[in-house]
Amino acid sequence: MGEGLKVKTMQDFMAEGTQPEILFWVGSAGSYDDRAKKISRAFVKILNKANVDFAVLGSEESCTGDVAKRAGNEFLFQMQAMMNIEVLNGYEIQRIVTCDPHSFNTLKNEYPSLGGKYEVVHHTQYINELIENGRLSLEGKAYQGKRITFHDPCYLGRANKVYDAPRAVLQQTNAELVEMKRHKKTALCCGAGGAQMFKEPEKGDMDINVLRTKDALETNPNIIATGCPYCNTMMTDGIKAHEKEDKVSVLDVAELIANSI
Image (cartoon, rainbow, N blue to C red; front, side, top):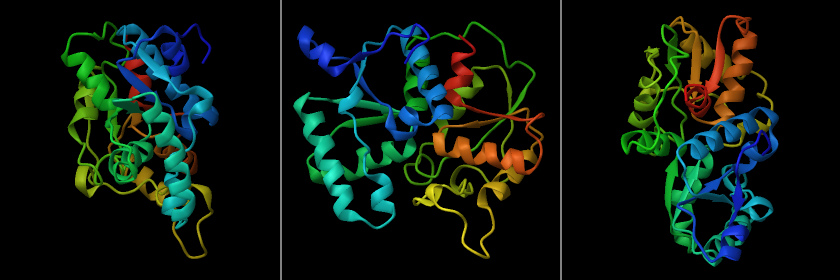
């Protein structure tokens, strides 16, 4: 991952005859998208700072099959899932942490019926755990006096009822947290769910991301915080559509915390 970050693969751990505390599931966006790679690096920086013994699968990690399933290709989803489960079970993986709510939801809720049973944690939950356990402390006050609004990812919030962890983490930045009118269980989708990330809006469709970004801008924020690489892209595009990119930035929770340690 560069930048002097320490990252070991499961093959490295196997060669040593040891097991990591967690497996970091990087996900397709976090592996290949240039913007999402920054989120992956920020999370690794946090793990290194907290001295977490973690591993990645590296080239052995494949897409969870989430997009195929949402697009209606159950056969392709099951092929992807079974391939990943074989690798994960082969390494006797117990606990998985990911920055991608789509991977989080799929690994947590859809892999068990296919034989893949793991404890799956979203990175905001894990960062909160590290802070609560005293393994991670925020020294800087980079965001003191800033206004931050958090956009709830659908697959983290409404699908899995994870609302408090990202907010608890953001409170640690000493910024002022401001809520959108539609938040938590009433939050509006960023527009990328259900494989919509990979297609253009159909004729007559409104741009959901532009509408959702309008919700965020109504809070007069300095920063829109996200907990999903797809939400990050959609909100960033929404900011550009509103011509506010010079006034408002879009950052993942992991980036905000990495900048504060």
